[in-house]
Every structure is written in C-alpha cells, then in structure tokens.
Length: 330
Image 1: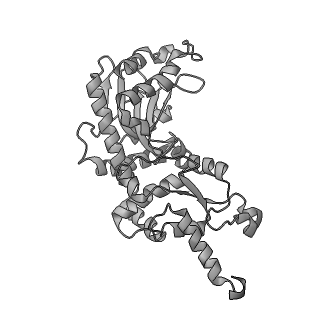
Image 2: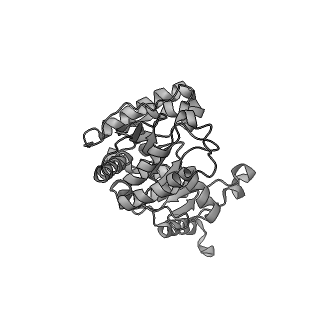
Image 3: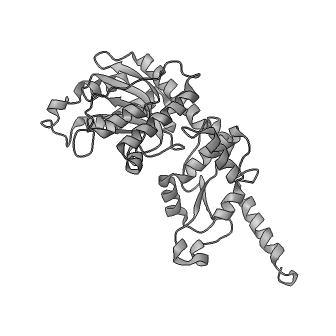
C-alpha cells in the first residue's frame, strides 16, 4: 500500500504543471482508480466490505485528488454522506487520511457559505461521538493549499471529522499506514452505529414517528436501516430488478391512485437491525437483500419479530383479507 501511495504523491503534477501535463491516458488514472484500491484491499482485508473509489478529476487534473472508502450502509456516492478519505493537498506536500463528508449535494442545497457552516457543525457532532475511542486519529485542521475559488477543496477542509497529516516527502511505514487505516475503519463503523451527524433527539423522533423504537440504541439501529433504504443508488437498482408491485400485498400503487403514483414503492432492506449496529457483514444484492413493499406493508414489516421475513408478512395480508371476506366466499 505504501509503495502505491508513494507513487501517487511523487508523480502527481504540481499546480503549475497541470495545464501542460497530458491528462487523458495518464497512468495515474489507473493507479488511483485501480491499483491503490487493490493495494488497500490486500493490506487491510476488512476493507473489502467497503467501496474504494479514486479520482484525479474529470476532463482535467483536480486540485485535490482523492481515494475514498465508502460503507454502502452509509453512502455509495462521494457527493453526500460521510466516508474515509485520502486527499492530497494541491501543492503535493501533504497527504491526509480523514473521516470526511460529501459536500457537493449539500452545496447545491444551501450554497458554499451555508455548506461550510453545516459541515463544521456536523463534524463537531461526529467527533463528540468518536473522541473517546480515537487513539491514532485526531481532530485536525486540514490545509489543502487551495484558493477560495476551489470550493470542493475548501469544503473538504471544513468537513474533516478526524484524521492524520502525512508529509509526502517521507510517508510512514507500511505497518503504520495499515494501523492508521484500520483505526479509521473502526471509527467509521462506530460513527455509523451512533447515527453519524444526526442528533440523538432527531434519531428518537424518527423512530417514534415510525413506531419502530422507543429507546436510543434501537433508534440508532433503525436510523442505519432507513439510511440504506433511502439511498437512491439502492432504490434505483432494486426497483429496476424487482419492479414496483408490493411483494407482500401485491399492490401496484398506480392501480389505485392512477398515474400520480406511477413507479412509487418503498425499498425494504432485509438484514436484521441487530446486525447493522454490531459490525456484522451486511450485503446489498438488489435481488436477494431487499424487497419492494407498499408504504403500509413496509411499516408493518418493521413491527415483525424478523423484519426480513416477507413470507410472514404475506401471511398476515392473506389472513387479513380472509377475515374480511364473507364466510360463503372463503
């Protein structure tokens, strides 16, 4: 892993050379997008449960190239959520390992200034949940050496939760790099189980509103579960493969509400809530790990002893329909 990181930081073109250095076909693209993710997976096998993505830019050299590790239970999109990130400073002098936040979609919603404020506030909440467990990673102030016009780099600075700064002229040993990444992954898992940046009272309100939990630890598990189900990438893939007819009551919502409800359906993750917070491996196969349910069936599913038992949910629906039928028609 160290060798590949060293190749990255030693060969990325300095700011003054980026305009004259060919971008298309650069071997750095394969290094960042393929070789480093493979090296991370080999060095830290547990990272294979995470998505590892890298970028040197789209159509031209980015000021702050990165490699990021994403838990699909949190996000599958670097534009939102939170993740582990290696980010190289624009001057090439510093490589940061951080727990950081997606900023692109937030900036679209509230503007650059508002995004800075929200990222800092979220980072404080997340650090408060990690500070007692952090050993190697610290609360840091990132300096990516970017101008204020490079908004993404500036937002990464504000979004840093915890991390380490490496001087690129002398990276740490392979063992230390591994230990640092292992700690980042451990803290990432803790952060997910604690609700990320969502405040405790909001977690409770969500769970109570959905009648899914009345204790904080259960509310945090429920939050992870609902975060999975609300991710656009999961929703789109599941609907594309399973359709939009409820897997429990067989309702196609457009048949009741017309075109206004065309394509509407909830996506339900079948993994038991207990596994989501306890560090067990969670899979995201759109065919086998999810079900499509209408909102009513989805809400009832969360009241089952096993929310993944869709067959039990179907039996409830069938028995309910049977109870409403005249005896002569049963």
